[in-house]
Length: 127
Image 1 (tube, rainbow, N blue to C red):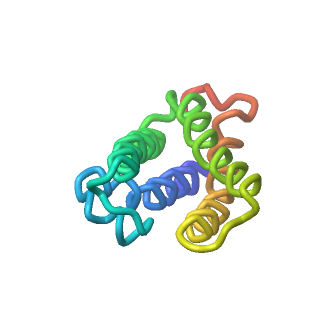
Image 2: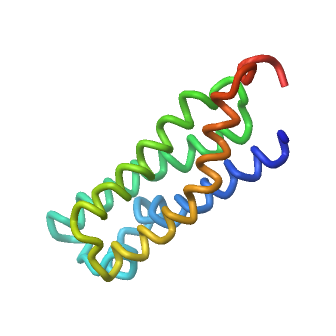
C-alpha cells in the first residue's frame, strides 16, 4: 500500500508542476491562461505559480515523509477542492478554467487515496 500511496503523491505533484512552472517562466501565463504576464493580473497569476510551487513541494514531501501526510493532505485537498467549488460556483466556464477543472477532477482519485491513507486508523504509526 505504501508504494501506491507514494505514487498517488507523485501524481499529485505532477498535476501541480505545470502551474508551478509559471513562477519560473512567467510567459507561460499567456499559454496556460491567456493572460499577459506583465499586467496586474499577470503578476497575481505568477504569484499563484509560487503558491503552486508550495503545493508541488507539499506533494513531494508527502511522498517522502509519512509523518507529515495528514497536514500535507489537508493543504492539497484545500487547493484542489476549493478550485473545483469556485469553478462550479462560476457556472463551469469554458476555456483554460475548464482544463484546470478537468485536471483537478482527475486529481481527485489520488487525492482521495492520500487523504484516506493519511487519516485512516493507525496511519500515524511507523510504516
